[in-house]
Image 1 (spheres, chains in turn green, brown):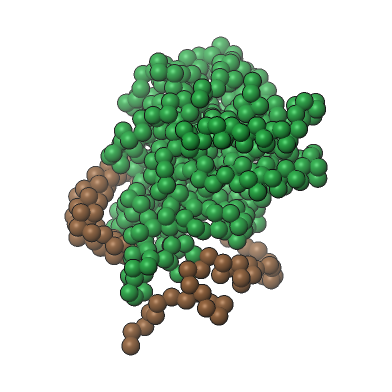
Image 2 (tube, helix red, strand yellow):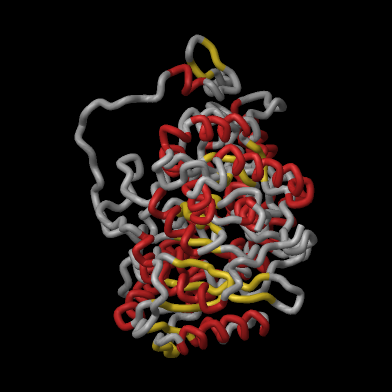
Length: 480
Length: 95
């Protein structure tokens, strides 16, 4: 395997064995970026200086978890003094004066940060086509989308342009691109990873998580980024574990629920067959699999498309041209400064969601929309809690199809539907991971979603690790 | 389900400027999305307490002790217009 195809743990083993130096590793990944970036276009900014800084600190940090390992960061996570654009014209020239906690943790762990990756603008989208700058292309088929909104991060991992990456997930934005790009994506329990420095989209749903080449790497990344942060008042204390303890091949006695209502939805037969075949393998390995009944996922999608835009309309009110970001040059008074700045700075999808959110929160509509959606949220969360009283995990497909073709979805609702399986998880705040479980007849990756109870990352990792061994496809790489 | 007036209203509240074509387009698209959202009314939520956050904590406070702040120069570093250590913007009050 090429150096750029190796996982974090494989690279660490090679460094320890004296077979590779961090300088050689960084060189290999930088060369790979040079080689494929014009076709994949994962990165908004390649951060040579920051990477070299990480490399220079290797000796000091050589015992740390990510010492010498090339990592990419989604461009909605603040990097001190380095452009953080959220793929928006609004922040095209914005350089944060601080690091996000998750980024700080990567640096402390010795990571060599390669760059900031492309995304849907302000994390609103499911294909990375809403980036204000350019499309990212799926390494498995360049005419296809990498998914979104963390499409750049997922594509970078799949293309060998980094060993692993950070993404963020509000309605599926780590898991769905991971599925489309044939890599592993974990959305932790809400509150497990600090949101300090993550540019807010929907504060009650956003979570940072790792996108990696395999499950072991996901556990390593979680050990680095998870944990309480006093700077994030929604971050949780006392729940962090050593996630690598769950890297065991053992699902005997694990109770897995298959929600009939999810599987009855309209989606690709090849995806369904691939997921069910993987479930059978878990069953053969000793897991107890049963059908369960849950609230139809489309209610969660409906609640999400009230709650997320509502929270977004509040979070994006700060972009007014006053203190940072774009200020319109075509404004003759303060009112025009606000409206022109926001007109020029925001793309279509962002404007659409801000308006939906504003409407749903406005006087006369608040009860019917926002309050109603908050109540449905309770029903959905309780639904998951109920299942997890008797079951260890729930399995569903990650996405209804494999990676869509670029430019194929012009209707917003159609695009929203690609998140049908992932959204309920954010609504309930539970953790979930997408693992590759096969390929369709066009050799496009299929993802399986493992959902756990709150703080159930360990069970997820154990089952995913076992599944990975059973399927034995994790070393397959996209040909570029 | 939603008409142009509603879109103009929401845009006004959100400080968004829209041209006629955009108003038409958004009216249609947002209308479709809100139609989909209407299915929430199919669920009985009469005695249900709303959930704002899924974390089990309340009143997350810290000691009222002064800690480090962002230095002024850093705070102003991205300012579109700055004067005398302050953000400068068009006047708000009319003559």
